[in-house]
Length: 494
Image (tube, rainbow, N blue to C red; front, side, top):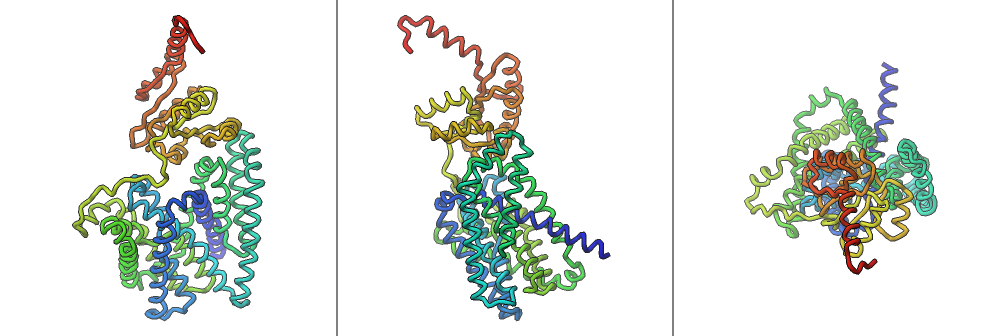
């Protein structure tokens, strides 16, 4: 038994890195431009949602259940959080992330992710019995200055150079290992200064979001995040006492219903006057569950003796049940809303949160790609370029062109380039295997994507036609046409 318990502890420590990698990928999405474009959704609606839900649950826990004030605050703000991992995945997969309610939900989720940091700091302060709050706050301030200063220096002066050297090695394994080293290193630095591992990962993500390698990093790290996050949920389940649930099932079900209804009501109330009842209700239903950070915070608070084991287990089960219900709610959103409100469905006015659409994506920045970009610039067409050769990426960026490092044949890279909203994708690469693979990936999207590809010979054209690529430019034929056109002109000019 002892051996099993020791192994469980080791497993739990490994699983916690699922939260670390989740915070890292969230940090990758935090650009100042992105936040400013959604400032009202993030900083106004998000702040109100966390403040009102967290405050109300904390007061209820203290006055109705007699829980000590510090513990009640942690419980309240832990349950104010929703599941970023589940909600954003389903909204992305269904395409509703680009609707008004999807945008509102995204903005509030972004603020919740920011709010995790002060909640984790509160646990550190509340659980420390050896020092006064004033000395702890002062110590926290000094540690924060140190870690932010170090991260700023590394991010501004060292990170790009380090990643450039890694990319020049042209080995994916070394690239992934280097990114893992940076994430884990930042996490341990944060922990050594008295903060959580997650805070260090979040700051590392923010640093890397400013580099040209952002999309490739995200594509490579997502599998690690998903595996470790799954392991985290398994270890949470392993800690649940089934006999305790059997004794408290009525309390759990009651609290589950009250929590989900209350969270929906708060979001509905703060959004009703700005977006109308239907969109407000959709947003509230999307955010009515607890989240993965709720589980992490409750588990940490329990291990820090701020919450009793019985209370934490009841709350964890409640949060897990709400998360299990979320996919069913989101996938049947229209039916649920139609049964509650008679307000007409206006299609929710599909919008694009990033502001980039109807653009051309150029895959490859070799000689052909550079010529295409030159002509697109002359035509004032909105475009971006994906290129896997770091030297060509540097060349394009030195020219002030939107050239991004990434393997265009990875679906996640194309999603980050908003391929489903693009006018067309021009493939300007010479490698036949990469060309066919890229066309296959583009064809795997639900939305029809206009693919413009170059065929070097008849065999290549035949392969492209087999993939149902409709816009194929025959390199030899077009070159012959151009040569003959110039040769037959009476007064040819350059």
